[in-house]
Every structure is written in C-alpha cells, then in structure tokens.
Length: 153
Length: 88
Image 1 (tube, one colour):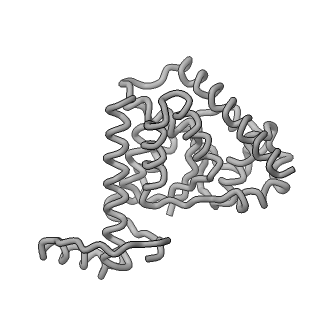
Image 2 (cartoon, rainbow over the protein chains, first blue to last red):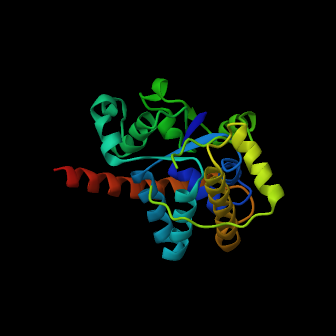
C-alpha cells in the first residue's frame, strides 16, 4: 500500500484553496488505498500556521481532520530522531531535517511538496519528491472504495 | 488504543453487507469496518466545514505559494530551534 508524506504546505494550501490540487489530495486520500504518514513536528507546523493566521478554533478543526484520517501513521520524535545522524549531512537547511527523517522513519513511498527548494537538495536521489499534480496522478491509479486497514482492534 | 463500547443499531441488510466485506478479508471485523467508516466520515465533514469557513475558490497564484513557503519556513525554523534547545 502506498505510503505518503504530505508536507505542511499541502495541508495549508488544501484547506485554504478549494479548487487546488492540494484540496483534491486532501479529499482523495480519504477514498484511496493509501497510508498517510505524519510526524509530531509536521502537526505542530501546520497547527502553528493556522493558529497564527486563522485562529485557535480553525486550528482545532484542522487538527481534528489530521488525527482522524482513517489510515494514518504517526512518526514520533524518538523515531525520526534516530535517523538524523545518518541523513543530516545531505540536508542543507537543518530545519528540514525532521521532515526528511520522518519520511524515512515512516518508510514512505513519496514526499509531496510544493517547495522546489527541497527537491534540489543533495538528499534528492534518496527521496521520491512529488509535486501535488504528480501525487494526484498516482492517487488516481491506486485502489479506491473500501480498503483494508491494518489498525489493531 | 483505548476504546469504548458503543452499540449501533443497523438494518439487517447493512450488517449483511458489512459481513461480506469482513468475509472477503477487507476488514478484520465489524468493529474495524465501523471505525474506518466513522473516521472517514469525520474527515469528510471537517474538510467540508473548513472549506466553507475559510476556503477560497481558485488555485493559489505563484505569489501566494511563495508567501506561504516563507511563512512556513519561519515556523519551521522556530520549531527546529526549539527542538535543538530541548536536546541540549
């Protein structure tokens, strides 16, 4: 099953622009046979943006969406933190380290972002970066309808 | 994961359909089906509500995309600095 890491810009754009590819991704991931990998760092980033720009109530709703995704895998600080020494020399800007390491810790198949700066880093050969458009194409090819879950009862 | 027992009354034809999915191996149990369906519905409703409250039509312009990346970079830097501080 496809495992996807959506960068913070995908969530923020998807919630703010109803006709964007990012918005379509946020609704398609609910219908497709995919696992969405998130990290505590990513959650904080998205929620921080909403608190600053749209208020606490809206941040609460966004949090509700993010934690309610039917197939969601959360990577904790302690997990991605273990991978920092292995990858940080290939990541020019240290503030991106938690996201790249969460991608590896979550064993993701793709890292979806609108940030072209990220895709030009030395780490690029090791990370399958995708634009929202590329991600949508891949989502459309993946299974849909009812899907299996691997959550324990 | 902590769980609570909730009784759901369903028409027999719906339970039959759910059981077919369980028999086919798509879900481990009726409970798993219900959890999945509930989470998916919550997300759909919340996404709709967010779009109604703050969503703007159209696609983001290049300028809007760049401005957003600058704002995210600022938050990302602050969170990273906080993380490093907590480690030391």
